[in-house]
Image (cartoon, rainbow, N blue to C red):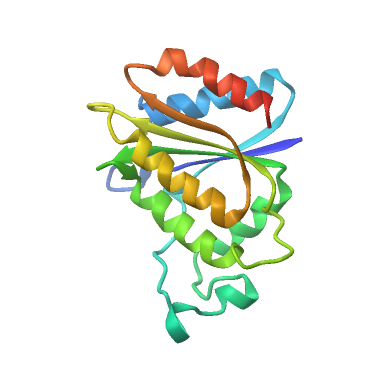
Length: 188
Protein backbone atom coordinates (compact mmCIF):
# COMPACT_ATOMS: atom_id res chain seq x y z
CA UNK A 1 0.00 0.00 0.00
CA UNK A 2 1.19 3.50 -0.88
CA UNK A 3 -0.14 6.74 0.58
CA UNK A 4 0.48 10.22 -0.76
CA UNK A 5 0.35 13.20 1.59
CA UNK A 6 -0.31 16.54 -0.07
CA UNK A 7 0.22 19.46 2.28
CA UNK A 8 -0.52 23.08 1.57
CA UNK A 9 1.54 24.55 4.39
CA UNK A 10 2.12 28.19 5.10
CA UNK A 11 5.56 29.17 3.91
CA UNK A 12 8.13 31.58 5.14
CA UNK A 13 9.33 33.64 2.19
CA UNK A 14 12.94 34.58 1.84
CA UNK A 15 14.64 36.13 -1.15
CA UNK A 16 15.82 32.81 -2.55
CA UNK A 17 12.95 30.37 -2.07
CA UNK A 18 9.86 29.25 -0.26
CA UNK A 19 10.62 27.25 2.85
CA UNK A 20 7.94 25.21 4.67
CA UNK A 21 7.08 26.45 8.14
CA UNK A 22 8.38 23.40 10.00
CA UNK A 23 7.22 24.63 13.38
CA UNK A 24 3.59 25.11 12.33
CA UNK A 25 0.51 23.02 12.98
CA UNK A 26 0.18 21.81 9.39
CA UNK A 27 3.72 20.47 9.29
CA UNK A 28 3.20 18.84 12.71
CA UNK A 29 0.21 16.98 11.24
CA UNK A 30 2.33 15.90 8.26
CA UNK A 31 4.99 14.52 10.63
CA UNK A 32 2.34 12.73 12.71
CA UNK A 33 0.84 11.09 9.62
CA UNK A 34 4.24 10.09 8.25
CA UNK A 35 5.26 8.52 11.58
CA UNK A 36 2.01 6.55 11.93
CA UNK A 37 2.17 5.32 8.33
CA UNK A 38 5.82 4.25 8.71
CA UNK A 39 4.99 2.40 11.95
CA UNK A 40 2.36 0.47 9.97
CA UNK A 41 4.90 -0.28 7.19
CA UNK A 42 2.89 1.73 4.68
CA UNK A 43 4.91 3.43 1.97
CA UNK A 44 4.41 7.17 2.23
CA UNK A 45 5.44 10.15 0.18
CA UNK A 46 4.88 13.79 1.09
CA UNK A 47 4.65 16.65 -1.39
CA UNK A 48 4.63 20.20 -0.03
CA UNK A 49 2.43 21.77 -2.69
CA UNK A 50 3.52 25.32 -1.93
CA UNK A 51 6.89 24.41 -3.42
CA UNK A 52 5.17 23.57 -6.72
CA UNK A 53 4.22 25.93 -9.51
CA UNK A 54 0.45 25.58 -9.82
CA UNK A 55 -1.52 28.44 -11.32
CA UNK A 56 -5.18 29.19 -10.80
CA UNK A 57 -7.73 27.69 -13.16
CA UNK A 58 -8.34 29.83 -16.24
CA UNK A 59 -11.85 28.39 -16.83
CA UNK A 60 -10.81 28.44 -20.47
CA UNK A 61 -12.70 27.31 -23.55
CA UNK A 62 -16.40 27.29 -24.30
CA UNK A 63 -18.57 27.96 -21.24
CA UNK A 64 -15.57 27.72 -18.92
CA UNK A 65 -14.43 24.26 -19.98
CA UNK A 66 -11.18 23.73 -21.79
CA UNK A 67 -9.66 20.37 -22.64
CA UNK A 68 -9.87 19.38 -18.96
CA UNK A 69 -13.44 18.04 -19.18
CA UNK A 70 -12.91 15.68 -22.12
CA UNK A 71 -9.14 15.07 -22.18
CA UNK A 72 -8.64 15.13 -18.40
CA UNK A 73 -5.54 17.27 -18.53
CA UNK A 74 -5.05 20.98 -18.06
CA UNK A 75 -3.83 23.17 -20.90
CA UNK A 76 -1.48 25.07 -18.57
CA UNK A 77 2.20 24.18 -18.55
CA UNK A 78 2.96 24.12 -14.84
CA UNK A 79 3.35 21.32 -12.26
CA UNK A 80 -0.34 20.41 -12.05
CA UNK A 81 -0.57 17.70 -14.74
CA UNK A 82 2.53 15.88 -13.46
CA UNK A 83 1.17 15.77 -9.90
CA UNK A 84 -2.32 14.82 -11.08
CA UNK A 85 -0.99 11.83 -13.04
CA UNK A 86 1.47 10.94 -10.28
CA UNK A 87 -1.46 10.61 -7.87
CA UNK A 88 -2.60 7.57 -9.87
CA UNK A 89 0.34 5.57 -8.48
CA UNK A 90 -1.00 5.75 -4.92
CA UNK A 91 -3.66 3.73 -3.10
CA UNK A 92 -4.79 6.50 -0.75
CA UNK A 93 -4.31 10.18 0.01
CA UNK A 94 -4.02 12.49 2.98
CA UNK A 95 -4.75 16.16 2.31
CA UNK A 96 -3.58 18.63 4.96
CA UNK A 97 -4.24 22.35 4.75
CA UNK A 98 -4.01 25.27 7.09
CA UNK A 99 -7.19 27.27 7.58
CA UNK A 100 -7.09 30.86 6.35
CA UNK A 101 -10.16 33.08 6.75
CA UNK A 102 -12.38 30.01 7.43
CA UNK A 103 -11.23 28.33 4.18
CA UNK A 104 -8.50 26.02 2.98
CA UNK A 105 -5.30 27.77 1.93
CA UNK A 106 -5.10 29.52 -1.41
CA UNK A 107 -2.72 26.90 -2.78
CA UNK A 108 -5.11 24.10 -1.76
CA UNK A 109 -8.08 25.83 -3.41
CA UNK A 110 -6.04 26.38 -6.57
CA UNK A 111 -4.94 22.74 -6.82
CA UNK A 112 -8.31 21.22 -5.92
CA UNK A 113 -10.22 23.49 -8.32
CA UNK A 114 -8.13 22.16 -11.18
CA UNK A 115 -8.24 18.58 -9.91
CA UNK A 116 -12.06 18.64 -9.82
CA UNK A 117 -12.19 19.96 -13.40
CA UNK A 118 -9.82 17.30 -14.75
CA UNK A 119 -11.09 14.28 -12.82
CA UNK A 120 -14.79 14.73 -11.99
CA UNK A 121 -16.03 13.62 -15.41
CA UNK A 122 -13.41 10.96 -16.03
CA UNK A 123 -15.17 7.58 -16.17
CA UNK A 124 -11.94 5.60 -15.77
CA UNK A 125 -10.51 7.82 -13.05
CA UNK A 126 -7.65 6.26 -11.11
CA UNK A 127 -8.53 8.48 -8.13
CA UNK A 128 -12.17 7.44 -7.89
CA UNK A 129 -13.07 5.22 -4.92
CA UNK A 130 -9.70 5.63 -3.23
CA UNK A 131 -9.67 6.44 0.47
CA UNK A 132 -8.79 9.94 1.58
CA UNK A 133 -8.18 11.66 4.89
CA UNK A 134 -8.73 15.42 5.05
CA UNK A 135 -7.19 17.48 7.83
CA UNK A 136 -7.94 21.17 8.42
CA UNK A 137 -5.38 22.90 10.69
CA UNK A 138 -6.49 26.14 12.32
CA UNK A 139 -3.99 28.16 14.31
CA UNK A 140 -4.92 31.45 15.87
CA UNK A 141 -8.43 31.26 17.30
CA UNK A 142 -8.87 27.70 16.06
CA UNK A 143 -12.03 28.55 14.16
CA UNK A 144 -12.77 27.80 10.52
CA UNK A 145 -12.07 24.08 10.49
CA UNK A 146 -15.69 23.11 9.84
CA UNK A 147 -15.98 25.42 6.83
CA UNK A 148 -12.73 24.03 5.46
CA UNK A 149 -13.86 20.45 5.99
CA UNK A 150 -17.10 21.32 4.16
CA UNK A 151 -14.95 22.24 1.15
CA UNK A 152 -13.29 18.83 1.43
CA UNK A 153 -16.78 17.27 1.46
CA UNK A 154 -17.42 18.92 -1.91
CA UNK A 155 -14.08 17.67 -3.23
CA UNK A 156 -14.91 14.16 -2.01
CA UNK A 157 -18.29 14.27 -3.77
CA UNK A 158 -16.91 15.35 -7.14
CA UNK A 159 -13.86 13.06 -7.09
CA UNK A 160 -16.03 10.14 -5.91
CA UNK A 161 -13.50 9.19 -3.26
CA UNK A 162 -14.14 7.66 0.16
CA UNK A 163 -13.42 10.08 2.99
CA UNK A 164 -12.37 7.88 5.92
CA UNK A 165 -11.11 10.78 8.03
CA UNK A 166 -12.43 14.32 8.37
CA UNK A 167 -10.30 15.84 11.08
CA UNK A 168 -10.40 19.36 12.53
CA UNK A 169 -7.10 20.22 14.21
CA UNK A 170 -6.41 23.31 16.28
CA UNK A 171 -3.54 24.32 18.50
CA UNK A 172 -5.94 23.59 21.38
CA UNK A 173 -6.84 19.99 20.40
CA UNK A 174 -3.80 18.78 18.45
CA UNK A 175 -2.66 16.20 21.00
CA UNK A 176 -6.16 14.68 21.23
CA UNK A 177 -6.59 14.69 17.44
CA UNK A 178 -3.47 12.58 16.97
CA UNK A 179 -5.61 9.64 18.08
CA UNK A 180 -8.26 10.55 15.47
CA UNK A 181 -5.55 10.69 12.81
CA UNK A 182 -4.36 7.22 13.87
CA UNK A 183 -7.91 5.83 13.71
CA UNK A 184 -8.41 7.29 10.24
CA UNK A 185 -5.11 5.88 8.99
CA UNK A 186 -6.27 2.46 10.23
CA UNK A 187 -9.13 2.77 7.72
CA UNK A 188 -6.95 3.54 4.71
